[in-house]
Image 1: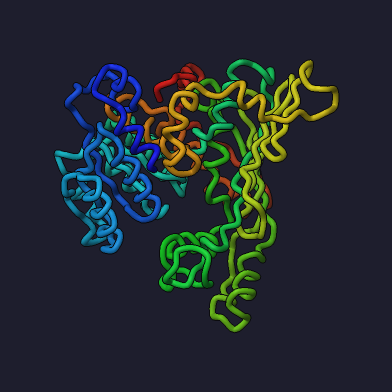
Image 2: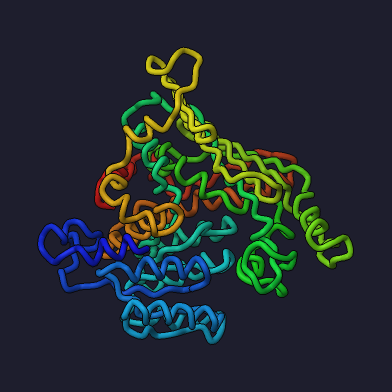
Length: 450
């Protein structure tokens, strides 16, 4: 983050500096005002958000919450090193986060906890009048999806799903191409989460990633809670990294919506094989029966006639890819192979290298803040998603990725579970906007501030 610190240090309080640094732009806050932010969950992901927030001049970290004292100590150390004020600390029990939400000096909260806590904490935050940012996925059940929407509508408080892949550089460049009609009328998409997570779902109870085959009570970090979903659910439990960017390109919830979905799962052998390979056939976890199929494929139909194929592939050895494909009447882009074909521009029946197109249609946000953002995490995406959250919260306006998006994208998990259990039976997608999608205008994604 040294380049980002230098960026901030070199920004003066002169007018040029005020424009250059995110958070100094004029809005409903006065120049002296800062957004008071509380963090619920300061594990590895929450600490990453904390470090990025500490570099901002328009944010105070006023409270932190985690049930792990070691993570609290690490967070307090980061705040002290950044010369921030000592935050109020919560975490004496699982429900202590509610006392954080009761604080008058918390305007907004960032929630980075295990999945089963996401919806209840976000709902409680909105009930308390706190602008909420929640990590992905936002919900685990259809009831929880409706809880997010209903609480937002009843309280008028906003929430944002912190889907950082929507801000990936190539994704925003392709979104720019979509907006400029490079591909013509859109027809088909592919996306997903294809990431070997065996070293994440298991560890030795001491090292977060890369060692051992323990999980649950004997594991630490994500293996302590994430792996249990693979034991008990045969579903696409992590759809939003792929689906979020595609939903924006297809104007879902803003002129379009998901209508129905079918899902199928392969057999599940990958996690068992990993345990046997790394821990031996006699290891107790070699007896665990994992319910989740290794490759789960879902197909969504939209109201505007597009199809979206989503793939969840996290239990087998493979390179990382979100498998993006954007296809229209005039051509298509595929992330794997970095290739593009545009009729009239590419040689007939021949792929073109996509990078020159990505550079040509580079998004204004990346042109403006790219150098500053790169050290923020996940190649710069983490800066942009958090910047959008903070700027929206400061003005108390609807964020780019709102409660309706959080509900629709997260609904893939429970719907896929039911479809798989019923031999691929089509599942109707709830209309979380209750018909308002027909008239809602798309968010202006081509702005250069956030």
